[in-house]
Image (cartoon, rainbow, N blue to C red):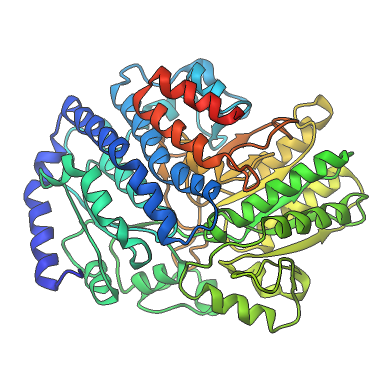
Length: 549
């Protein structure tokens, strides 16, 4: 039910009355409330994952695993890391800081994580002018000040991944000690009773309000003087409508500054034309197949409705494996076969694309959702906007050496593709000394909020200690992937980017459970969620067996 203007005013008044109490809440009480939230998530997680799967029309059981990891698991995992930060009185561990690269090793932090997430590592990079002492001192946001003012934040929830509104709200509560008005997206407002149950400890004390909201309610909320800040996960066009009252044209985006209609502080995560850079090398046939499955996963996870969904595969022109990799990508697209275009307008987008004759449909014509591929040179507009569907583009880059290819591909994605949320680089033997210079060039020069080596950059979303957001420096009137960041459980105030590392291929026997080709994903992520919530040995045993049987 959409709230009326009177309902909204009353809700904001309730938050204002309780905002001082939340601001002054001691850590012990807050941690107790977070523990209650974890328990509530555990209780409702099965219903949460199965309801989301049903509403999205998921066609096979294994794909339900996406709703477990992108829903209850991601939330429990993040809350546990926020608790760790709140309880930590000692500051950062200097032994994890590399002064030459200005990086802090942020994942894994526990031995069990090395078992649950083998070969997956994460670090946070900072500007070259910062020392460890400065990074450690300027960390915590409102938690390091005594004289904060009460704050009310409007969180505009995303409609695609169910954990996003929860994680956004948690970050603003913990980092800024802000009470929250969460307005759900109409696409997934079926989550309202679930979120109401999991956040009961906060809602019952007047620290949070969760409502649905149509366009009229959303406009009233975003213009309301009762909020001190807004956080949006969504479209850059939605952002422009909120801040400027209209969608900007290219000329307006090119201006140095542009007067705002809405001057309230706003942080944003707004998507990306996500590139996957394929670095040339000597790949075996099985490695080509594995990387093809990785790319297909990055495209088809959540039916392509991710802000970090693969859109452009950047390939070396003339490389001996380029055509073979393309063929294998198409092979696995066809093997997956079908999905559901649950997001409003996406089916129409795909129909329009097919009518241009610039696309090849890979799956059967009888499928619900066409899987399309095209050469980006034929569809150049999709270098500058998200396709938000199951279309994938190839772009070949000329090069004269491996080092030259790294520079050329970096220049291309930094300057020719819209957005800077996340990028993936697939490079064999990335830890070999002979690849040191090339690897460091990719990590340092790619201007993205998350740089993932040999893994889909969406893994950075799941790791709570890494910041999630666009690369710093986006202009207000050319917002790209947004300003600010969330997750970031270590509460860094000036991170530059998160970096994810993984092996080129994790296993010769099985695909990682997040691959769309792994038919055990629903079991694995269900038991992983229960284990994460309870630390139960029984659930750990179930988890191990679910990967094998």
